[in-house]
Length: 144
Image (cartoon, rainbow, N blue to C red; front, top):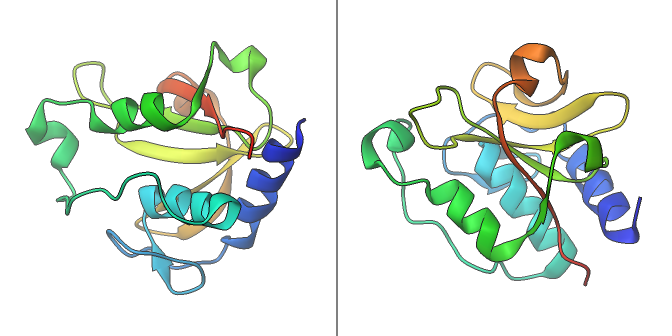
């Protein structure tokens, strides 16, 4: 791993236990999956490169735009496939092939990833086949 992936993973692990709050991004207070990524970015670099507009829980289904993937392409380095990914990389998920990427997490060690979801807050989950087959993109935080 590089220093940036080590740092990103350490930051993400510090968010474990944060309650789920739609559109929030405050460690220990509340966040959604995007808020987790935004919070890790702020801990690594300071200011966010862009602030998302307000979004509804079903934004990906309604918009027809792949805004999460587009933002990742603008601000992160693309990792070609899961075999090249390392703990600390950003992973985006698409729940249905016809929809935009809608969920984000940070790869962890041992085949796990850290993410925020409504029923549990920020947790470490296995990257089980049900999750792995939904991967839409993998990205690395840029070096500082």
